[in-house]
Length: 215
Image (cartoon, rainbow, N blue to C red; front, side, top):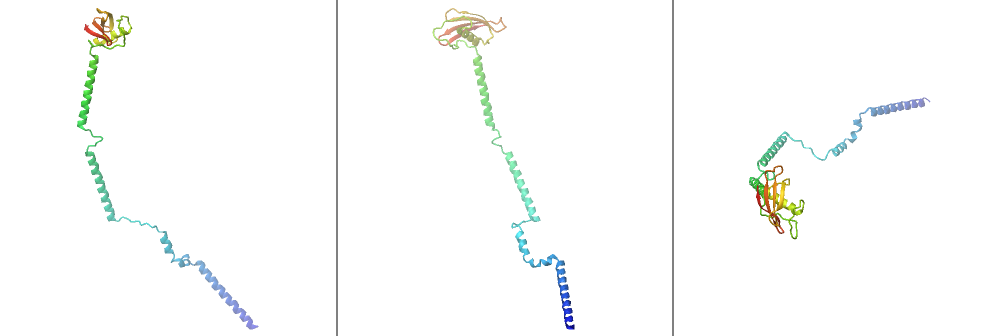
């Protein structure tokens, strides 16, 4: 009986020691740092970090390289400035003016203006002994009816010969000594003292012409 009691006590004691030891191990595991738990993965960590690094390289300029870059940039700016100055100094084909062409252009314009003046002077010059043209056909009969075609063509010939305008005063248009001759007496509008005596003659198919003008 006594032996049994001793054995039971020994077993209980051993169980208490084991329980205490397990409790200590558990507590130690709970309070251990996480780094200690991950120590087994230390060999794999560098591989993961290396895979996350960028594949391209970033090269930082050293002081010497920066100086060289600045010098190259300054030289480039100087070249651009020199090129711009050279372009500005050279005459532009689009904007530049050729003195010879400009002089020739002015000369042509001057000649054109003179020719226009000559034509205008010729148009304004009194037409004497020159038929003015006609719209009449067939046998011509001189008409002294105001407003008729023949009458209006006589007035046109008188205006061209005297230089008077349509507002001239017509004192008379009468027979000038033959069936194809007429004489007219006219004056500028508002100036009855400045009278013109105009003699006209008909030219077949060509119209009336002024043979003389007396003021």
